Image (cartoon, rainbow, N blue to C red):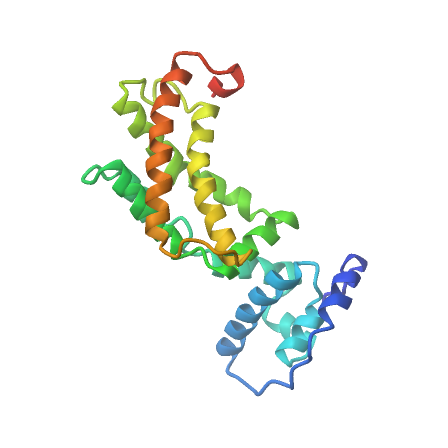
Length: 239
């Protein structure tokens, strides 16, 4: 059985303020495991990953030992929570959408962010942000997928439009990545405002995406020329 570390005591006291649920009824093993994962995702998204598994067990109405019957350690439980929550994140078809030239670039990006919107709910955003703050590697693992699914296809397309060198000739520049992140960061923050801050936002995701995409593509095209002409700072033109 895993023991509670001293670093989790503060989080434990805080999460123990939650009302304790009544003892849970007996369930088949797979159903119990699924319930633990579902509740653990919500629990850690609310209280952080330093929160005690004993408090999670109290919330589930089971003994702490039962959690370790299904997951050998707290780290194994957290890893599985991430895997379940983000199993369809950055799916292969997302990269195909941006690269598919049967639609305009703006239309492809709109479709891409429509797919993204389907995964950007409150639970996933909270888990993602908590994971980054608590030092879990999920954000770092998703970065290469962002590059292959969005950054490279988008820059390759824009370079082609402007008759600039292919990525195979001149590797992606730091400034080009930042141009794409200007758009992507705006979309991610839009969902954070909606789901995390609970701030008033335009409810139609598609309308917002189209606004961001249109303004971003206008700026990207102009900025790309400047970068390739060497007019930007060296730190931005470096690969």
